[in-house]
Image 1 (cartoon, each protein chain N blue to C red):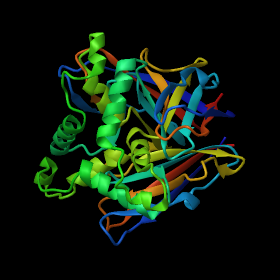
Image 2 (cartoon, one colour):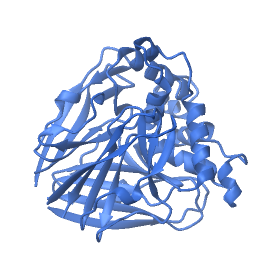
Image 3 (tube, chains in turn cyan, blue, purple):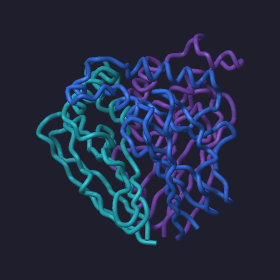
Length: 131
Length: 131
Length: 131
């Protein structure tokens, strides 16, 4: 069994941003790759690379986990309560199957890093296990 | 370490359908099975095989990610914006622990394929790693 | 390749409770740990160990998956329809990367067991694979 570990770094210009990282994932011949945000205000998801849909996702996340002043978490001085909930809603990690040296994804599946509290340096860990 | 890969195929009659696939997952003696929808409009989840609850889940998904005409994604000619959001809400994959040659699930845990845009051929990849 | 399996047990005093289990996870030198609730009314998530935020999460789950009498699931005699939906919303499992013998998490990432239908004995399986 082989394992590889790599780290991806992000520093977005906008508060919220959706970045396609499908091609960034290291591969083995056969196994799995864990892609996991190392922050509690960012997510990882798999879906379509279609700009209209990405705007739909952004609006939907704002509706179900809205920005606002009323989070108890803000008593700590933070202002990003909504970003924590968006992280929980979309999930902070995915596991990608790898077969014959390639990500074993469907034709429309793309891997996204979703930043919910950007303009600072952030990290994603990619851990690959396989043979 | 051993790895196995299998693909499950679905073509539902209804637009949305919930199919118990617990018995379809290949096993090793000890390890993990990744069960991952290869589509961006279908999900995989673990919950109860109780028909009332499945209807509750369907209603809940319709409430939080409703069908409707107003998705930007529909400018591409698609009509399934809601199915993408349902996929993000419920998740497109699970990892099942395998112990002593059996799925190491609780007594009520069943694995479901959730179709959100059916009536077409779709695929799920099952990747097993273990010994 | 090595695998380890352990089980964590919980019996909360309150119906809903959020318990930090970060230090409970067994480790290898390099690999992954699957932490998975063995119940359909409890979740596992990774987020902040900040008490205000935990109350925010509780309120948010109550808003998006409210307690109430109107679930079809309750025709079976159960009263915990909301707990099933909270489980689906927050997710029942996470996979933790392990590097150099430690959980490879960001500085604020803590692993939580989220009980949604407590006051009874419940279990979480931790399956570690690596070298």
